[in-house]
Amino acid sequence: EVQLVESGGGLVQPGGSLRLSCAASGFTFSSDWMSWVRQAPGKGLEWVANIKQDGSEKYYVDSVKGRFTISRDNAKSSLNLQMNSLRAEDTAVYYCARDLGWGEWLDPWGQGTLVTVSS
Amino acid sequence: SYELTQPLSVSVALGQTARITCGGNNIGSKNVHWYQQKPGQAPVLVIYRDTNRPSGIPERFSGSNSGNTATLTISRAQAGDEADYYCQVWDSSTVLFGGGTKLTVL
Image (cartoon, rainbow over all chains, first blue to last red; front, side, top):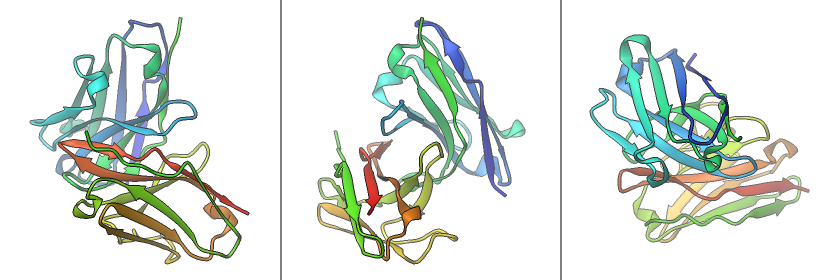
């Protein structure tokens, strides 16, 4: 069974940092793109970033460029999101998802981890 | 930048057919994917590449895509279909979601 489990969420002050992780199992992690998607409370889905199989290509939504960094460790089947200079508007549930690549879909998704940016 | 437009809400009577639209400039030239999200749960893929159903998704769910509109159709709507539905495409190296549609089954 394909499974994605996020961790690392929590409460952080504005300007602070947080590192999210996503543990993957049940598929060949190194064969797939991976994405992070977030959802602010009561709002819709917003794609945050994705990364190619070998980490050679990374893309970000404009609002997080220069602050967030996506990375992966294929040996550990792990996806990460380093979030710096956090703002109140970054408050959201963050999901990791297997990304089938250019033009394709996201499936499956993890259960999400909540990040709250507040003083 | 490319935008996807969905109605905020759609209502359907129990057992009837619901249609949720996703508008975008020449969206018919793109692959459109649809997700269902129930309260407190992660999104679930229900349609990929415009018309394809993943295994485990009922045949009642179908999709189409032409011109400037993609449509998710839910036939014989059930109470369990109440959820938020999102369309998704790729554009210029980024993943885009529509704003989401809340489906209410009356």
